[in-house]
Image (cartoon, rainbow, N blue to C red; front, side):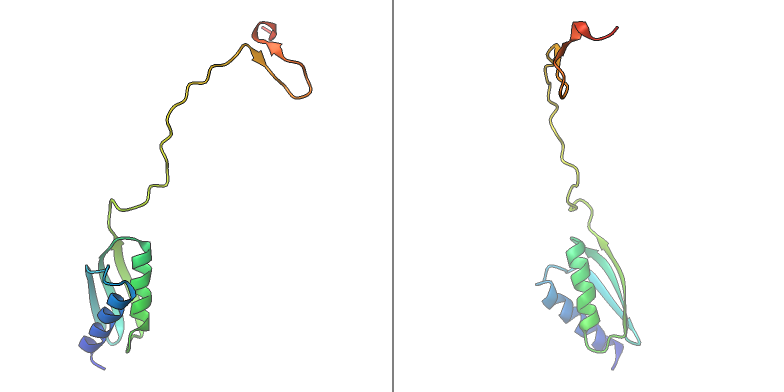
Length: 106
């Protein structure tokens, strides 16, 4: 099978697997070894494109050079508002009666 035909099979498989979301992908084939280059929106699209390329007719191996688009990553940290907590003069310990701040050893 010619490399140009394999490339078309891979592009069709990627289009079907990602419902057309992945558009900026370059597919190169050399004796059935596929090289994927381009940019995708997320890890799920990157994995879907890789798996689709592996399923395509005539593919021997896949080299995945797809990059994730910057700015679309889910932020792992949530910013928390600072909260001011008023501290009373009494500290409570388990199984002990409370000590006031004036009774703490100086």
